[in-house]
Length: 284
Image 1 (spheres, rainbow, N blue to C red):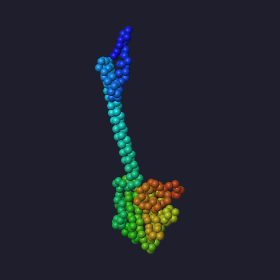
Image 2: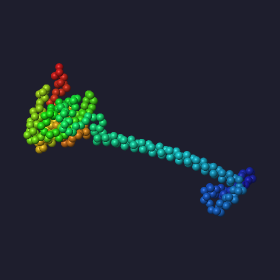
Image 3: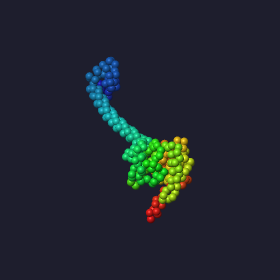
Image 4: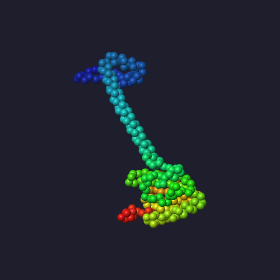
């Protein structure tokens, strides 16, 4: 109930104040039965308090709409963030997979076939392909039809453009004691016809004695002599990454670098074959 004081000021009586304080609790059904009856009895006779109830309801309705809108925006933001995180994780996974394939599964993609059986070697006078364009002339490698021993392994890989190719040629042969000595003698006598330069023999380039025609230059051509097993391993590498070898790294020269370049060394490049400059003057 409202009362008018002298001077025209309208004020609420004590009962209205109490009832209006109880109305929010009544709407939430948190009042005792006696308090409910008090509120119900009062609003039946008080228009202002009934209007107050409607105002409270409208305010609550607006608040609920605002909360729902805010929750909706938050939900959409969280959902969008979730997809962004999934996309980022997916991108990282793809990057890791591609990196793994590049580092640990070399030679994937379009490359030349790798031969591992003897008949392929015997049919290949140029060690795998008729279009061989490597720097070395593979003087250390025996002719395919002149291998006196048993071919254990033969790997041939070439990739690149018409301008520059990388090569990895690996030939492993087992000999009898007599055949081994004959092959060792042949290797030590190899000389290039154009330059007259002979191969060199070293027991420092590898754990096995090594005869080499080219080292520490654009390519590496050498033969390893395993006297205990009567085995010779012939290797030619041109721009081959150390992580992309078909054979055991222990057969590499000690200073062989990751991309075919030697690690820090003062060793002067050696090759029995003519350099580009020598080839030029020879032609003129």
